[in-house]
Image (cartoon, rainbow, N blue to C red):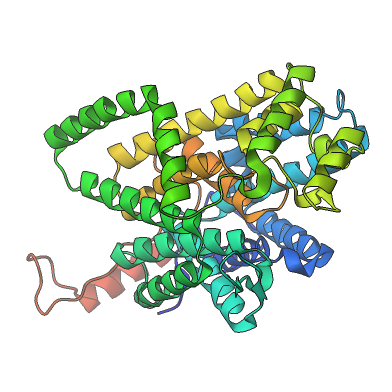
Length: 449
């Protein structure tokens, strides 16, 4: 069986190359290219080429998705508008335009694929890139010695990739409506992801991988409950989350103590405390609208140049405060950070509602990934142009914004046909003579008209 779905073209979605196989292949290429930053500018050129092809194939569905989820476009538009008040307008304009294209990539992926095909493309892209990294074999420095970094060039990125591969592999394996070959590849993907996670020796990667699987299993188990037990589970979850939110500061202290004493992680690793203090200082300087997108690291400010030298970094393109929420407040001020957080929180709430009201393996996977993304954003930057995490963030946000309604924009995938030895219920037998006579009558009426 082929990797891609063989669905009929919906009549309301015209296009010169409107084919589900082509759309899924282009989506897969887009996701793979989002990981290949090592290719340099050619990677971005290829992403733009594939994006144009996706738009050509599905222009109607792209427009319909945009009209239903248009409020989310306020995020990339805010990024572009920060050029007006930026301390480095040229930098903010350049990277703001790139972020706008990144948002359109996420929008095009959601518009091009039905739900299961979207999860399938995420899994296949993660598996392909992970295998390429293993074959490449490039290693990088670590506290415990050389670790695999592959074509990604980063231990942390390898951990993120392996965590995504592990969760998506389990999601396709348990989903009986996925093609058989894809489910078999999912069985292969589980040990591949586990190998990379263990060899990478990333405590954060292991924790997020375990948490992602736990969330996925919990959501799938929730889907198996009847309405009464679902209600009870929701009430119980709220009862647990409220005290956790109230005591979050104590839990954070315990987590840091566990990280230092059990995992032997340096609490000053990457100087996050110092970076966060510097970010808070910058937020206090311009609290309402901020300094402009990426101006903190590429604007040429003397303090920030000194910060880069302190961190031993010569190029600030990939450097950040290791806290996406603080990064938003620095770049867009408290007003912009509140707008972005509010829009993404609303999209996330709709994702959770969808997982609760219409449970399925793909829905549980995307919900778990959104929750993991929200957690990772506290210690990493998941908001950089063309970055795989940012593409996935926009994919999750646009898909979630559609709410609890089933995505009907892309051609629906057919239910699998199960052949049995006998008919499940009696029905009229096929009569070739009557069928031929009916066809001749229709042709005669058509000629008469």
